[in-house]
Length: 395
Image (cartoon, rainbow, N blue to C red; front, side, top):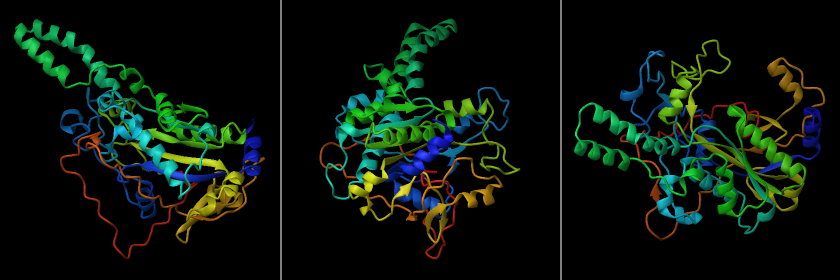
């Protein structure tokens, strides 16, 4: 299908966002995320000690061997995860990548955001999940490190150390790493993120992931919309997931080199000197607009958001921007065959608190809390929200 035909189809059959869920840096839920966007808070920080140690890995010289010249990025705060809520055994967690576990929680919250007192609001056999994925699993490198134990032992042996010392070293080294189990291989795979969500939440329409590098989440949204436009599904969860700001990721982008030496991202600025890495998971629950109106999804505080609309902030909310505004703002005329969707204003959505876990043993902490976590400072009472332009509500 050509771009113009796809745009025409979207205009004729608009898609509604009926639920939202997220975990982003300095924003553990969708309400905090929108608050940060509205007030223009910068969520970029120095790397927390629980992620990796700058004293061991940082050097401002981009050419320094086995060092990264960057130490700033967007880091999600330590999260708690109760495996029983998803029918998982606690001893499997060390074998499952962090992004798979957090994606389960965000997908659950995204569906819960659209409930509004209606049990069974989505048909499981007609609900699917397509997510954008990129990056390395947090468990892959530690699992692979176990395989170097023989080589390290041989190095100690060649340096003249006795077998007792080598045995003690090997036992200590392996004890610090997760063990290989039947859950290890699927726990490292990015494509299992969508499959685990579908399995644990009993979603039986299409499920898969999309890797289009930095455009992965947008590619996933397009694929999810296609499932709705062709009536292969009635509800789709889509978005993007990345939870790996490990030292490996920093090395990959440092040696390219692509990271900002100044530690600041300045898109379209003459002072721009690179990008930064950010963790985050954001998901949308999508339905055909006609179905959402029929099923009473308009009952949420915010009006429907149509994916075909371009929106910008005004008077505390967002409203569509027509093709003429796009031409004035960018200096480029609208694409041939593109027809803007009908205008439909909406307010920034506010998600309810995620459901609490009741009873049972304490939840498992996925990451140790940083030794000195940053204190989140609320804006002054008289602070005015900073108006931020959007291309769409999921930007």
